[in-house]
Length: 139
Image (cartoon, rainbow, N blue to C red; front, side):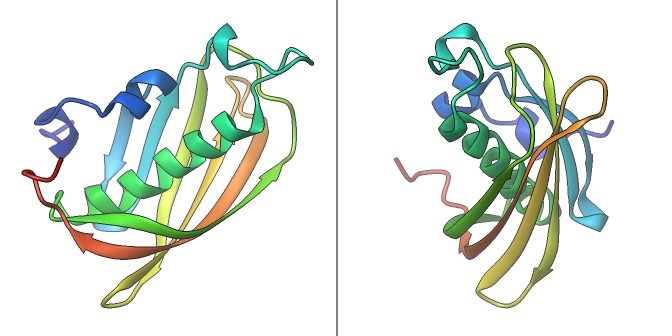
């Protein structure tokens, strides 16, 4: 894989918490694949990964698809996020596949799916996001 924007900067704390790992990116197509590694600390009382963490994994798949597509010059700010939980997510490795569905001058439409290692669909999401310029100096 060619050098990625994501290899030039440390992962933000939220991505580190989720165990974010770049698998593949296809900038020209606006697609990305990311692995996450949910841990026991993310479990709800039923013993499955709590839905907020699942939503965060999907969000942290969709956003990087736009970042990859723009070579890191633009980042998304979520306007809305719609999540469908299809199967329980368990600790271990899960795979997120995200893509830019469409984009205008100021808004991008994004989607993502989360799979287990058997390639079973666990959850999916769509999002609208405001497109913002990336500011390396922002804190």
